[in-house]
Image 1 (cartoon, one colour):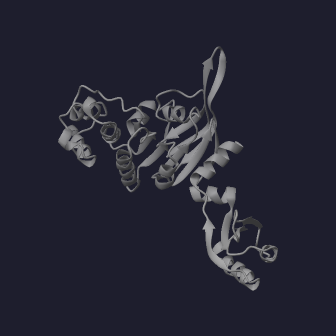
Image 2 (cartoon, rainbow, N blue to C red):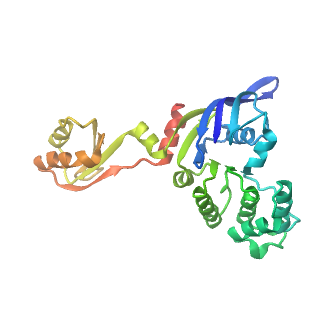
Length: 313
């Protein structure tokens, strides 16, 4: 649905090229919600602007919905919806008129019907005659989402859709994005909100001028950190640590005594905790261990992101 090969965008500053996007190779599947993560200035918005045919690439090629960027730009613009961080509404016009203008530009056949459909879907129908400039940030963002979807595009680009929104408005926007997941639309989501990416995205790409890594959040966790069991003990002895290290399937053991108290915990790297934990428990009990509880250590998407960005992988 979205494919890039060596996509580049350079800008000039004092006669020197600044690399905003440098050799991006990426494939986003049809019907996928793809999260594009990276720090400020990483080139995420520039990438979206190239894929939506708002600016041209310096080098490389890209295709959106089977159409090539640079050759089929008008058709691509008709096939995509785009939601920017700043809604950019006509603030002195009503919500209904804002949408009608864009529906007409997109050549929507039933303009009144489509406007009504999306105002109702986003709980704005009762405010349809109100000037957009009087809306809250959350209401403006919902109106901008409606505008991006009026022409039923198969591909939707969303650039920080919940930025600067209060928690209630952000939840409304996230919930609506989640409903789009079941409609077969391809959604390219740029966000700084890692919890949002975890909840909404099938796969994520971590990007800083170049693509550092791409996969599901769970697969990236396992690639970076493996799987780890944490065993909390009332007492922690060298014999207990040695008994666990002696198990053939154990990859690594880290012993962490409690600060200022008896006991501690073992952090054990494994390939299959569900199958291997019973043997670990048996070895510890054989050494007289009093086990308080056992759980799998879960790394957050923030841990994954910071590791990748910090390592520049």
